[in-house]
Length: 327
Image 1 (cartoon, rainbow, N blue to C red):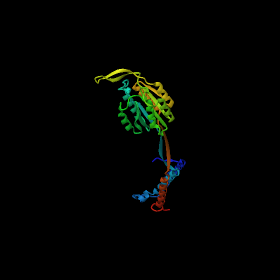
Image 2: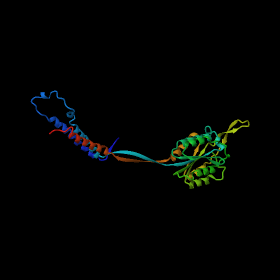
Image 3: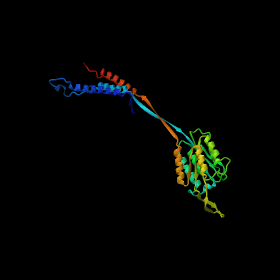
Image 4: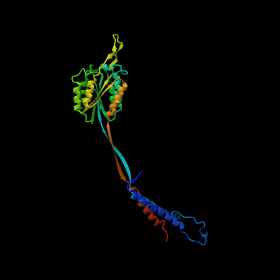
């Protein structure tokens, strides 16, 4: 056990028992008695009492040292810390329309976007994350959760073609907003990824963005894909035919949606760029963690004072009984 002395100036008193010890044994060496003949004492062995005659004095020195240590107020410390996290609630809204099968990403936009999203999810801590999917309409794949294993399993089970085709960006935003509307997190974020233009749904992206702004939700928008990309078609005999197809991402709309909510628009034309975008969002939306440390001091003087007093009483008892000196 390590002690810290609250009144260390009393430790200077250690010189007193040290000087007393030195003086006592120096005086003892100077003391002698003259005898005309020492043959009388030859063969006389020292008794146990004689050998330990100085034992009470040594006990007094030890007692003095312990009392001085007690006067210096030894204390032990215990440390504790309190971690306060300021959580972020994030909903990832991903386009799963059939245009996401374009192969300018490996193996395609759909698979690449989900893989990068999973990496982003696995890199987060203390934040609740949910997922919304949209094509011609939108639905919640996973509500807000901190169980990233379940979220990863659900993202691994996403299938294309389960809902009507199209690109309802406004519906995707509104569905994500509904997942966040009851959130009490200090920061609420939507990451919206799409490769097209809004062509379905009853709510425009701009109106949905206004709703998000009113609820203090930031939207980061990502336009994924190149303007021309290989796209797989099914041939007349069931074979796959890949042809170059024109694509258009509505950058102006996505930029305005992000800007009005306090977010940012990004364009990802390859997988490395998409990873970089998620890394940048990860840095911008970091969970705030405060750690408060506490130190508690425990008085330990009694561990020295009580033994010191007991040893001193023992020394008095011994020198007045077993080790009593005759005058």
